Length: 253
Ligand code: PGA
Image (tube, rainbow, N blue to C red; front, side):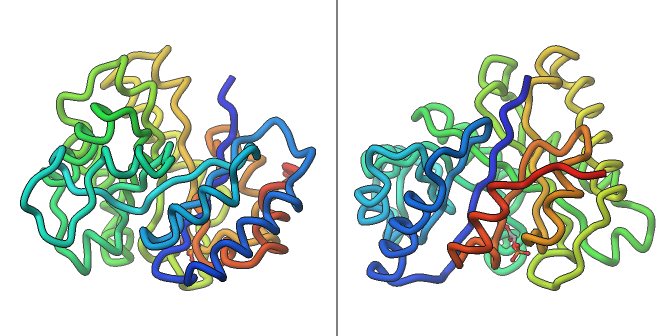
């Protein structure tokens, strides 16, 4: 059984006071919710304060990036050990905004996945095609290439700690969600790719989240799909009402 994970990606939003207030409201708004894991990924500057606000609750802390070295002269970067130190359990890696604006390559993302795992962090590895790639019918090839490169030399045991997030680039922040069927088709394909890479048992245990314009009014249909194991939520995770409603999804077909 895969426990669904709903993770909020706060991106470059929320100062410390706003982030703390949101974290506190989430803790009270999500009391009594079970059968699903919840994580929030604030910007680096708010990690410590949000971690304090989440203390004692079941909401987990995640970061949005790391630098793939244990420590060293890397001005401006944050190491995996620093994220563990501040209380992070998860780290988002390979987000399309970083691939696009910061030119992150699959090789670099693969190094990050290794370093995260070495330090006991659970990567939420994002993959997904652009609109042009989908229009050319290349979405499966693109996602498969990313997955293989980003997970190079990750073994079965390490893989048990990894979460995959399928985020079609054309659906992120655009209001154009993939239909539940489009998402399910890609999630099924990803699971089959994982079967080839890691075998049936591991592939069946890995959570594959959907991300891209997830909102309170489409989560129920998405979560009804058999291979959608949760969501990575951007915009709708910035308000307590919408994020709490997403966490409290009721799958409907
Ligand atoms: P969105 O972002 O929900 O605002 O589309 C999702 C993401 O980028 O993780």
